[in-house]
Length: 115
Ligand code: SF4
Ligand code: SF4
Image (cartoon, rainbow, N blue to C red; front, side, top):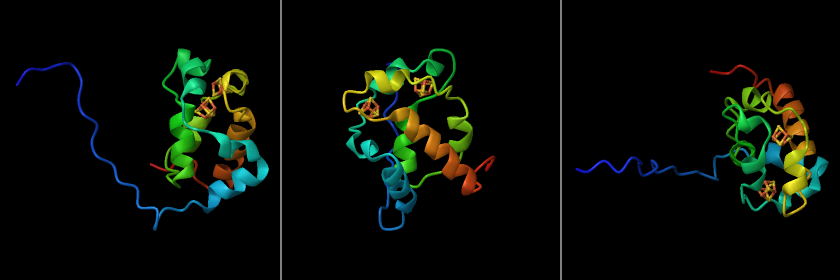
């Protein structure tokens, strides 16, 4: 078969009956603008950190929403809290505050350094 240089993503099903979305409600409480995110990816495309290292805020945000916390604390540690993503967000999401609060909650949840 011809190799076109890309693959079809593996199918991934999210079971929302078992996913823990309660933690995300706490983020919404702290930063209400987070619920306006439409996952457009403008924040990730312009991120200062991702210019140099592998980091994608949009992806981390989505995982947090779905209650998939493993490895997220380490990912958020890559963010410099520069706020550039906030400037480009078309929905006015206070991304910097979202990341800041997610870091705190992940720390409280002891989700640091989980393999
Ligand atoms: S730029 Fe704003 S709306 Fe787009 S994915 Fe990032 S936070 Fe969400
Ligand atoms: S605040 Fe963090 S996620 Fe946003 S642009 Fe800066 S380094 Fe990237």
